[in-house]
Length: 241
Image 1 (cartoon, rainbow, N blue to C red):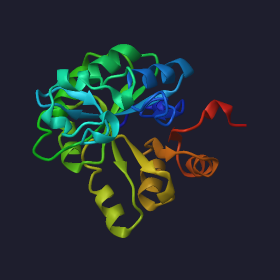
Image 2: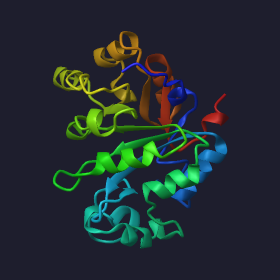
Image 3: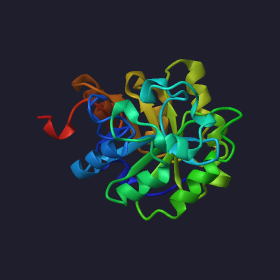
Image 4: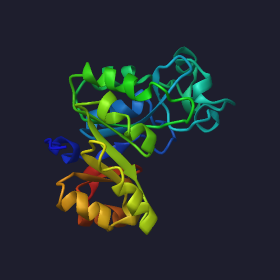
């Protein structure tokens, strides 16, 4: 798909927001998103469906690491997710709409759709509906091929990408198999660069390529040798010399 996605690579992308490695400001919270927006960083976040079909910003399928409770995201309603306190802080698990309302177009949003087979029906539709009403720059992406196959119909007109990793022949062929699904960028693990898939989409298809997850200077260097922008955490890119 031909589109201008220069905004996707114009600034570093804060992985799950500009958190502090979950010491006081936790990942995928409104506090982390506000901190990123104030610094001028784009924001990557993770989204899955609640029991009542609402896209909620949360990374893990289970609640234990982030909220200290047993159970799974798809077993809770949006209201129940909103009542959870993340890492014992005052932050809750926000809905995607709450995150979008907070950011309000100040910086780009890169939204990773996290599928749970049997419990993600309607995820692409729900996220697409929110983004069609959103005035800011936003893109969607996923590791999950079954969600990507839905995007041309259910998220038409929204920039969509493949989140990927791997450098084996099987990995690369699986990535190539996704090219017929209206995609326009990829987010690739920096440690598996370079590879022929990324070289092809960057040079021949003119896709922007972003990397994940960059945490040190070596990963920064590799990113800008073989890709266009980084998804980072644990440091301030503006402080790099």
